[in-house]
Length: 239
Image 1 (tube, rainbow, N blue to C red):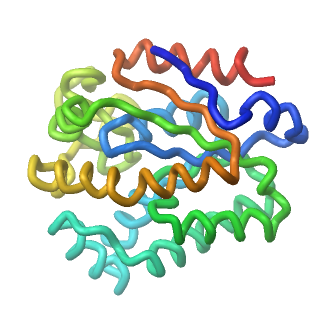
Image 2 (cartoon, rainbow, N blue to C red):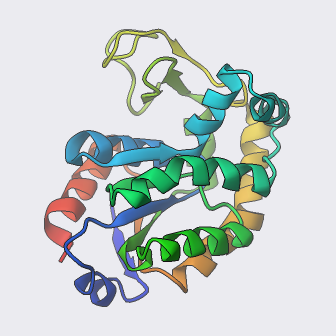
């Protein structure tokens, strides 16, 4: 896997304080944002704020936001930015208040939300701690991964039939709960989400790169290659 350093990463990281960086993960659906976040959480003790998990929790609790979100997701639509921003604030602020190392996965999605989260970091004097993680793979690979993945209904661990299958079919390796397939992981919605990323979120990522330092990983290789590169990044490549 090729690692590309972009936007004065070495300079910016050399000026970070002793606090661990806040990782904000960008990438099309299917590039492994959840896998990256899960690995850093398990191996290095980072907290993981997944916007997708937060939304699914609201859906399972049948809150008003959850009902609206469920309807949108079934159609492959994205939630309104105001709704997502409110959920992110609710769950992210405690981490920022306590200076807890955290990975933010699935937000910001739009240019509007880039400014929103930048202001949030500034409120807690943490904008200098932020490091963007950009994951990329071709659309065909992303679509294949989306259509073959499953998730633990209990601990939210992510699996993929061809790259990281569970040891026992349909059973989570970690908590032994039943795996399930997300209702919106189908071909039509996968393509719609990839198109939406290129039209909207890619612009947000480029904007974020003008504000925060970033590092990019190709995730087209095997899971083992990806994890090796993440380990090298966490243990050797960081200043």
